[in-house]
Image: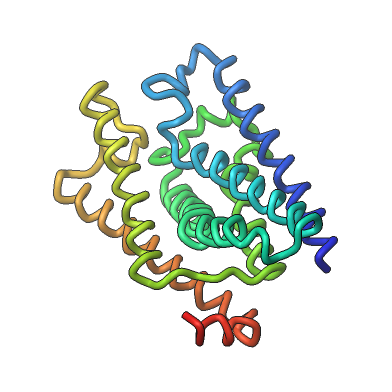
Length: 229
């Protein structure tokens, strides 16, 4: 099982490395659409998530290799960092992107992924960015237990990430007069406040849901750790 997990991490890492290389390169070639202007690819949560997932699976691969070389006790810092990264960012962000993108897309795709973008990003690429990210995260939960931090620590880190991204979106709008996502241009100031607040509460709900799944799957292994905590 440990070998299968190592292979899984290695394959998914290479998949995300490919996406992080290919998608921005492909988008920049479509210069007439100017898809990556005003902040390039770093303004889109979807692409930031791809980078985040590549970073996480890179850490997971490093953890796998070092455990085989040095053993568990000598790399506790790497394992703890891997778990913190997955529980507070990698799982919540990938699930958030999946849920919010497809909810808005099914309601009115022009608000989040206008039809003209199909000429830039084919169907397989759209699913690579917005669909496959969830199964990969769920498989990670099933394949390996993760130690969650205290709720205060986890939710605080999640809040910091949320505020940082919202601040970037608002800064881009203040500098360019254009919203990163078309849906934001349809909202009043009150509507934006409600949207951003709802996004944060959804992220917290996803975080708590991930913790519950982890406890359901690995609770028998987590009990000794919880007592020490």
